[in-house]
Length: 322
Ligand SMILES: Nc1nc2c(ncn2[C@@H]2O[C@H](COP(=O)(O)OP(=O)(O)OP(=O)(O)O)[C@@H](O)[C@H]2O)c(=O)[nH]1
Ligand SMILES: [Mg+2]
Image (cartoon, rainbow, N blue to C red; front, side, top):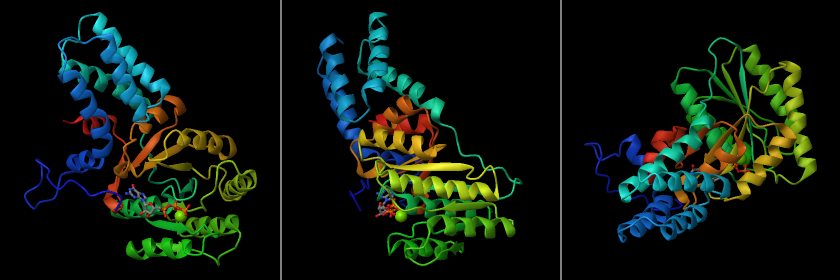
């Protein structure tokens, strides 16, 4: 565990388990205390909402990794409302932030829609080392199984010795077939075999793991492009989704990674993981404002149910909860 969860949840269910919103709120606790507690302290101690206060809020947003562009938009919104005399107290400040944050996030909150009868839907999962690719695949396998979909996993990370084993464990836990070869095998060939098998068996969803790779290593990015190409030989629309997994604690570097993966292999969706361990959850806003790529999922813990559909209102409310 990267942090110890706050067990005191006023909305806790009778059996002692926090509800979905409570879990999200707990998970975002670090970012919230960096951002919201700071703003509340600033606003609470003042009689007037003035320029100096706005500047301090701006600094807090930037240090929570909200990024320059999204911060500017949120601050502009706040200033506009102040000049219209709509913001006179702390509540109004928070309302202003909430409104603009949701406006930034809403356009990228596009759920991953898997059609029911269109053959195997192939999801290629990419990202830098340790961002959470394999774990996200395991969580997705569980989610799709629970929804009554058939699933096959492709152990396309043939580089790291323990990678196949890690994926196989997720497969076993969820009674899902894992197609794998030996360490050092050609990743494209593993994914090709897996997609072929999945299509032959009319499987609904193929989830293809890949080795973590630094976004600035051209050779490794070419290898990913090859994986894409061979998938396209079996089905011109495959991969139907290229899901980039970004570590929510990696700060502004996540934006650089995304740009590189986008240029090399094309990215159709993003999952942002480890928001539970990070005080920099504002990166979600930076990603939304600057990349305009759909954010499909957020990871807020290591358990299967800790992969959530990305819902802007729930996210912002959990972030700004006091
Ligand atoms: N707290 C927390 N941990 C996570 C989350 N997602 C993944 N992890 C942890 O992050 C670590 C790395 O996850 P992996 O899924 O192995 O990452 P990967 O991208 O497959 O790594 P490589 O294959 O080495 O590139 C593991 O310890 C996971 O349990 C999350 O949302 N929250
Ligand atoms: Mg992995």
